[in-house]
Length: 298
Ligand code: RIB
Image 1 (cartoon, rainbow, N blue to C red):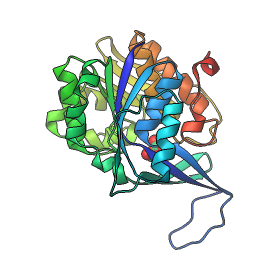
Image 2 (image 1 turned 30 degrees about the horizontal axis):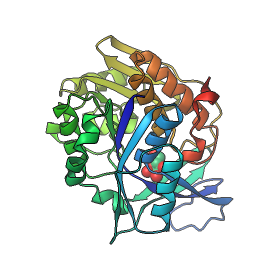
Image 3 (image 1 turned 180 degrees about the vertical axis):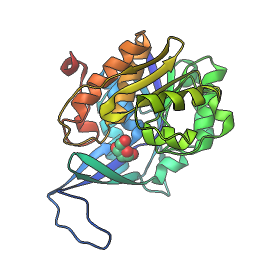
């Protein structure tokens, strides 16, 4: 089975449901509270696993109840957690998420995620050597992401980066990225070009290619995806669905896309798999509970 190594975050999501976002200084009575397994890295790992890939998670949790629960859940999803390190003196990452009107606002406290180090990547060299693709995001330290990209390059493995949450990237990282998958906000921050539609996305993608990235795919939410790769530039529209909670929609797309690529699908077919998974994800609440299985997509 093709193998994906995810170098990324593991969070417990603390979610409140409200009818609208509170104003600054306002106390609002909400409609519900839930905890869900989350974290961009873990969500992408679970999405790829539920779509049939073999996934190894490289990450960190604290020695606490959230960390134990999240590791157990990943294992239960078929994700290899042998490379999830338990850090003694720091708590597991959490995300405070407010969901209102189908949209969300998130504050992340990285905790143990920020202890995932270059040394962890070095220690996992043989896992990366045996992988088919390495996938990362920016909820773990930038030097760790850079080390993962370089290790992937050293062993001739494709490196996919989802630059989320939005942050500038070191120049040295660009040339080690085979596929960069930002959303509109992230692409705008990286390029200075305001990305709001397929035309501006293609302009931003071209400027990212000029920095040394091999392929770029910019997600545009309900407006679909702009792709630039060896086959040229194109826009692939999204499915029309009624969203109740967009949390992990991007993660589900990227997990699905990566699962499709390691199965040997062409880019547009892999994008279509990610889009179908993501469309189902937004019709349900929570991060990992909303990620679909392969049989649902069929
Ligand atoms: O992308 C969604 C994720 O972002 C949530 O699960 C939350 O943990 C934050 O990391």
